[in-house]
Image (cartoon, rainbow over all chains, first blue to last red):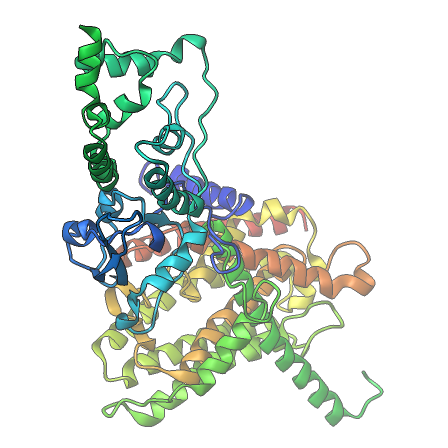
Length: 268
Length: 322
């Protein structure tokens, strides 16, 4: 017999005997549900109230598996002599999971947090055509969406917290309407929490960051955080900014429209 | 049993042997399912029968019965259909004469060692018939390999058993087991190793499963078989493990010798045989298949000389210390 054959045979026996005494690796899936990692991409869930039918998701989808139908609805003016407004009403929102490749781009681009990853994965069908799921099914999956992971210590406040702390702009009616829509969205998911800061020095970091990014805002005063916030984040609230601008032009208050300009004036 | 009428006694003994023949291979098969699975980090069958898949082989049997029994158009019909029984029945005969204890034995024959060895060799004829009659080149190749393997490994096996018979001074299995004493574990060790290796080869179990070698010749002589006839070949393999394991226990491990052997002797034989069967399974899980030339080389260059050496050692022992 060749050299090393006998040790090899004994080693083989030892290996199998050792595995016999250890735990098996079998995942007993239907009996024991698997422990999925955080941010598992199981299925895409929809919060219908948050959707504005902006079509960003449908346009960015690489394999065009999102179908959106909507119509415009005219809202009567809220104040006498005001203008009637139009609003998109979602008629159909469907994702064809036989085409979806789970890239998550639709979730990334959604400006209103209407789409979320759910870890739910047991939705196999016998017919591939049954994988086209409409908004009621997508909405039912929202219940399985986990709370977002906690923010890092020392990070900036979550956007929804900042927005909620913002004092109302313009008249109370507009702010109330804006708060109403936001409230509906926030109610669909639990708010994020921030982890406790590990050291006291970590707390001022976001302030310094903002100063570096926006030098024009260096001379701001503590009395105007809300105005600055709106200048920093205009695209997130496009519709509201427009409404605010309308309101401001009606009242002739320039500081509401151009907060950074007013800051500069004050500094000088 | 002596007070019963001779005909009733014959029927009772035949039924008992048949029951053992149907139950013990299933036990070994289930053990193989589970032991192999756990050695590979798996669980094995878990559903059939409820508790850890204990009824898996029963379910398999039901499945085999339901399958269509196909005979290839160009097959040698009668030989093809007869082959599974020729492979299976020798092991039934062998099981009948292997004693579990001096009193628990299907048929107490004087030269039972000779009978067992002769009958086990017949089983290979079934494989040969199957390979020839299938009209399939893979089947024929497999049958030829099986025949070559039988010729090579029968010799060391017979020599090893001859050594034990010489040491005991009898050709009766009961007599050999009675003559056994613990010193044989050392004295007959080379012969025991030769017997175990040769038994594996006779059973065509891995690492000696060249005649089946599914990656080379599909499934050897059994390629064309379906349904119940295929199940008979499988049953023959596991019945073979039972026969060889019990034979090893009786020849080399003292059979029923152990505590309370008056009453529990049969249990000791069964337990020892079961341990040998587990070793057979263990070897299958651990070692890869040998090549045809390696297989022949092992038989002629190692096992035959070892068996001859054992025979000489036994002869010296018998002469010096009668």
